[in-house]
Length: 403
Image (cartoon, rainbow, N blue to C red; front, side):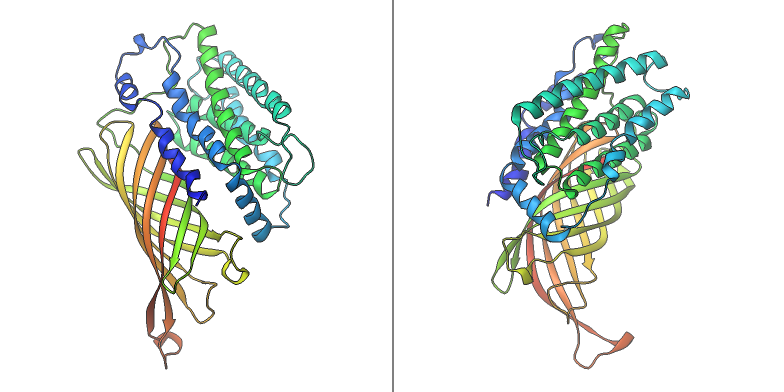
């Protein structure tokens, strides 16, 4: 039961700073923004720091064991190159003169240099001080992940410079950073907590770089975080990356635990006052933990669609429900089974770090049925019968990129 604490701790982190104060601060005139936005910076970095603390040591071992069971032979160097993609995008766009946050190329380069200096100052001494052995045993400088820190540094620099005007650029940068972090785990170079810590350091370093650059160039009234107008929709398209812990209860009697990785793409199809309704597609994989019998520990792929209903009490917070309808086309538990069907409901709490990026915490329950051909049925004329298979209790966290 230690695994769910990994996700439950994130719920506590969200309330570790006063939300109401920062909601009101978004409405003040820029002339009053002369101080370092501690609450804003902490709100975007604390979840990553908290995940790093919550992951170690139990889920570090579990996720490493999942990697060893399902993808033991993966060795791909894509993360060595992808870590630089978001930063390369930001620098390239700045050099060709695309209008962004910085008033000049010099200001952009100074912000980037200060951000990189901050990141190196945080990463390398920490590696030396912790002396943590890498999961592949190659060296003792695992914590935190430098590749992930570099990738999220670039993603946040790209977001701060161009995210307000071109949120799709922010989505590209964070997708590349997310893929880099996943690559470090798949390549057995880092523990999961190394990756989460690296992500937080990268984001914090980018924010420090821009804050110090604003001080140097006399732009103290700038703010790193701006709220969208109250009369605008929060988003037009959302890309979601979710990780959750599943507690699966089979109606036959036994239980198991699993890790769910999910990606979703949603669009708003209706809005009214402070309400917004989203509809989209989703897909993912369920990975049972390896302390189960081998015949019951096989990966399960699924696709489906989802609906989100969210209420916005403020520009930074959203409360709502999500409906999930999915099917598993190749269920591994029984060769006679044609597919699994899952339907469920999730309650969620969204915190908008920026108008185009938010963190979602969710808790849900769902039901799975197994579908078998009826006796005597064959080909396209087959009828199917459904048998109740299992129920899920789920707790998780997701990153939402709003375009």
